[in-house]
Image (cartoon, rainbow over all chains, first blue to last red; front, side):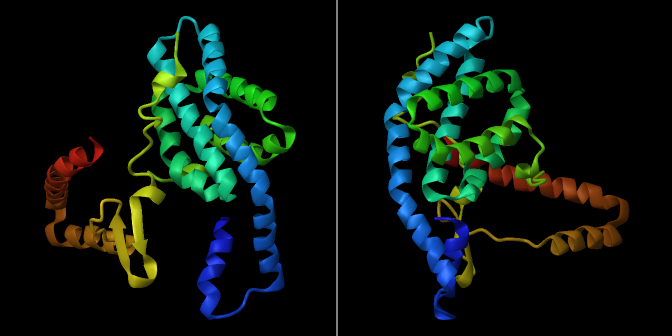
Length: 162
Length: 88
């Protein structure tokens, strides 16, 4: 659940929730069926989808060694799974803490921007074709956050953590 | 030909063991901080670390660099075996 909402639970002994806070919780609960639907779709399609992305990647980077491509694909799978969970929870900080904080400096070490840029383009295309528009709508914010953070290393997501 | 199915180990892709929200556990209200294995952790505030450095500097002058290096080596030697145990 959105971290601001879970913070409210700590206040239980101080006060009852205000109407707009109850509204936020209600909004999240009513959005859950859609989120679950998108999440399930992603779960079911993951392998087939990523295989198509992998095939395309191999065609575009025929001269690049397989280990480098496999590494980028593994990272993209983590990105996809973390984005799906963050979407389900409606929690960007989940994405930051669970994935972006450590993957961003890792990618800086490996210098895989060219491969990753092509991979994300291919991945987003595949997602667009595989998911329904409302499902894509749910997933997109997390996906965009993750991809832009990872490709443009040095953005706020790293939090000056060095 | 890359097979995506083969990239997984038991349907899993290893992430970072030390990802903050997975690694740090605890109950702030109880003042309890643990790592994911249940070992206790402490949080040191920055002013304390700064005070240690400046105090060391005042006490030992030039030798503070040697002191810090030896401390660092000692910490590393203690930490490495448990790190290897955890991440195997």
